[in-house]
Length: 114
Length: 247
Image 1 (cartoon, rainbow over the protein chains, first blue to last red):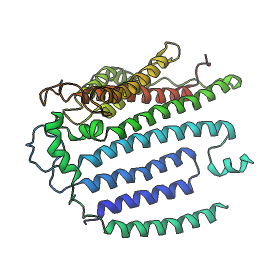
Image 2: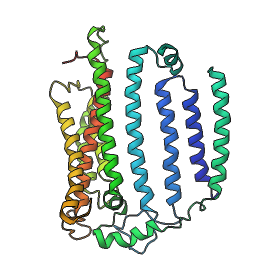
Image 3: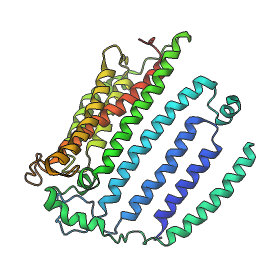
C-alpha cells in the first residue's frame, strides 16, 4: 500500500498520454492532456504527505505539530495554474483549427495541411 | 503513419515508460513518511520571520516567490495569447452567416445565477484578503471571482462585454495585478536589497493586516487571476455566443 499513491500518478500519466495519442477530437485531446498533467499533482502531494500530520497552517494548532510539506503544495499550485493556462491556449488553438480546416479530428488536420 | 501503427507504437512506448516509472517509485520514500527537510525548516522559520502561520502562502509569495512571479507572467502571457487567437477569429467572422439565437435559460437558472453573483464576489474577496491567515489566497480567490462572470452568463444576462467596456476593464485588472506583483518584487529589491524580500511592517501574527508583503501579494495575484480568467472565459463566451457582429 505504501506506493499506491505513486502508482495512481503513474496510471494518470499513462492513460492521459494514451488518450492524447488516440484522440479523435481536439477538445478531447486537451482534456486528456489535463488528465496527464493531473498526475503531477498527485505525485507532488504524495511526496510531501506525512501520516497523521496536519495541514501546514498554524492557526489553531500549536507550532510544534508535525505538518505536511508546504513546498510541494506551493509547487502544485504553480502546476495547476500552468496547466489551466495551457488548456486555455490549446482550446483557443482548437477553435482556430476548426475554423481553418473545418474539422476537429487531429488526423484530418494532418491530411489537409499539405 | 496510419492510426493503427501509431496506436501500437504508443502502447509499446507507454508500456516501457510505465514499467520504468513503477520501478522508480519503488525507490521513493514510502507514502506518508516524508523525510524533509524543507517543510520542517519552513515550519520552524516562517512564524518568526513572516508573522504568519500560513506556510503555503509564505512559500508561494516569499520563499519560492520567484516561481510565482514566473507563473504570474505565464498566466498573463497565456491570457494575451488566447485573446489574440480568438480575436483573430472574430475579425474573420464578418462574412459568415449569423449564428442561431441562443435559447433563453430557464427561470431557475436565471434566479439562482443572478442571486449568487453578489455572494460569490464577496466570497472571492474574503478568500483573497485572508490568504495569509487561512487556506486560500490570490489564485483560488481570483478564480472564484472570475466564476461570478460565468454565473452572470448562466443567468442569461446578455454578455455584451465589448459594448459596455467590460473587456477593457478585465484587461486593465489583469495588467494591474501582474504589474503590482512585479512592483512588489522590485520593491523588495530596492528597499532591502533582495527580490521579493519583505519590506513592509510585519504586524501581529493572526491579524488581518500582518505578515508584511503577503496580503499585498495575494491581492495583486487575486486581481490578476480574476482578470485573466474572466478575460479568457469572456473571449470563449463571445465565440460561443456569436450574437453580435464585431465592433
